Image (spheres, rainbow, N blue to C red):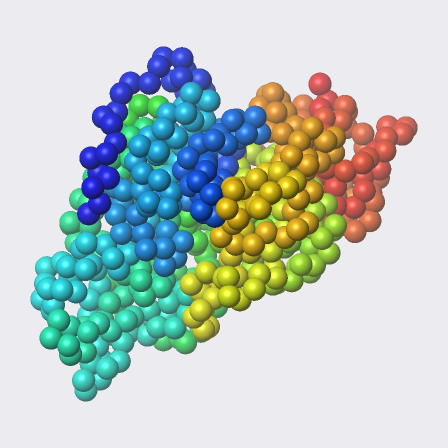
Length: 564
């Protein structure tokens, strides 16, 4: 294991003023706006072309001024980077490409002083194949107790030449890889639901649970405010690892409970974790990445004694269509109400095509799209969709760069791509690199202010005019729209937390709802619509005209009113 474990200073009490700044609201997570930072692509402090923790730290004032409540950091742990850090070799160390534990400690402390909370990624479904446990399991050979901490099995067939079952990797191909034993002979197989470099833990083994409870305490003692749990629906596999009986398993994902996903046993794990979290002051939280067949099953993860939030992927995958959006909003609020959990809305993240590009294309193409579509249309819809999302009851997540209106980069050369799914047949589309291109800060420079040494993925020249510098202070820019929306969201008493909306009568293709003295109207149609002028306009994603008690709402536009 890395020597970084002893590098961090012992935790010291933060100042009373800092604690008061961050902990000024109880149940802060119920209406929080949380900003996802993909550390590789946010800011590069040392000019090596790769973002790092010191770069993130230098940009924290920008995030404070944007108006978010917390920052979620994608993995920065020690890793061979076979899957951009989601293959963790050491959960208590920072990968040298991102810095070290002292940098993590400084970032957490600076965030606290600025009134921001820090949420870190946790990857409990699998480790890296370079994790010390797995390396020793291979070296020790069959029968090693360490192999019991993963899913090692003998193969089928006369010579064990076939995988133990028919499960397929999410990244394509079989979910099993056969090892070469220390004596050089073909041996057992191990399970990896993702890349071969990511062997799945066996959560039936007590040492795995013990280790992760220790990892939780390590980072909580460092001062983090919570954890986003990667593949939270994974971890537990159906006893006996039965065959699925299908060879197009990826088409089934999200439609049914699988023998390797969304098993009921995961909830026992999270109940144990919640007990640990509740020992710590400051309202620390868990956020689940749980791909489930229904929002009702997602609600199981946020029962009062389990996790706090779960991403609403059903909402993320919904088309820009009033009827479909209303249905998923109603179903989400209805599902969360019995467990007293907030709805958690999201439009983009590091695994899906940015919504400015998704909405630029025809509906029904999924969440990974390879075509640019109509850029102007996509941006109009993205801005409107953001105001709609931020008006809904609950919490919301913003992915870095969406506040700049960044599109996906759909024309990256094959030779620069790094998504492991891109190199494996029949898996995910493998085009996630397009949403991970480093964001632009300035109009000029080798990487538009990302760093002094270029960027690990090439940025389009058009991004100069989408940079923070180009949009800062410019009326009507997407950056200023986000700043205004987040400022209003905090100041309007009827926005933020809640569990219901009052739907208002509206023309076809238009959504309208009331929350107290606040009214949101979103026109998802391709034509302008006449709507009542419900009160004073607080904010709109595009130009609107008012006359004689009515408002003309252009196509793909959202407006906020107050009746106060």
